[in-house]
Image 1 (cartoon, rainbow, N blue to C red):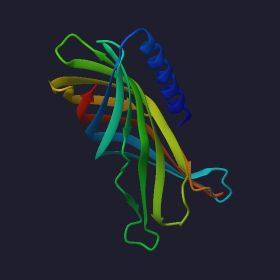
Image 2 (cartoon, helix red, strand yellow; image 1 turned 30 degrees about the horizontal axis):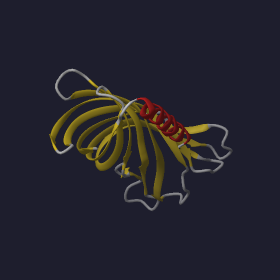
Image 3 (cartoon, rainbow, N blue to C red; image 1 turned 180 degrees about the vertical axis):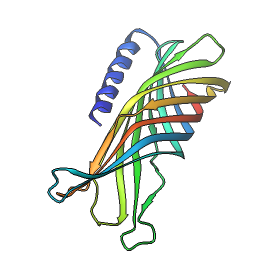
Length: 217
């Protein structure tokens, strides 16, 4: 999470500097999200010496998940805002191998601490806006059965872009509808054995539809 910490520090410094020269408006929000994610998974099984790959299996898959998120935001002026969004955990469906056999194995991945630092740019089309940011999440692998070995964890990150619409209601409260997309970096884990099994996830992309309630001060 070092990159996120650096980004948060940069935003904080920018906000403080801006506050010295202009009046900025803070906002907080709560969101419901529907995310759709797709990737290519590769499993490599090494020989007993761990010097060469015996078998390689590639699979393409996609899944959908519902999750919540919260965010804080600061409007630097009537056009530009900066913010930080933090989402709740969500998990991929289980992948079952050797089903019905003594060595049946289920594997899934959990995404935690999905955090996005972003800039929001209002455009002259009513309440429409553009969003661009940087997202990062920790990926935890979960395995049951099979070898009994555990896999490591990794971190994925990438650029996020989106388009949204903000409608003011009353008393500083507004609602938003937003669609964003993220191109995530590759993830690679293994079970730590000499004749290891290595799992990598690449070409991972995500689309996220969001409904938010926002309170501005």
